[in-house]
Length: 130
Image (tube, rainbow, N blue to C red):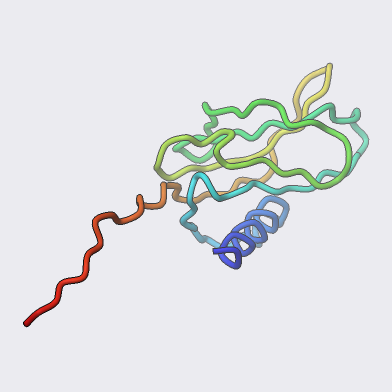
């Protein structure tokens, strides 16, 4: 479970900031309550970021689901997937920086299929056959 979570976080981190032509055409499956978005940000020629928002949708390039703001500052950022995605389905997501003067363009996009792990089985018994 921990190894899979680490793999998903690393893949999302690499996919968020790899050049568009280098992105593999992969869709990964993630548990909504276990996955985390991770990205990095470097101050460029624009203004400093006050924070970041994850943007997701069921169609590439369309992001009707927007997360609450994540605080700015520093290079590495994380946000739980459940902060923006709350229902099973296939999603396309990107991150945008913002400050008092507006919002940046979105980052490159990652896509994945999200769902929930099954509930635990109950009623386990031992049957002895004579």
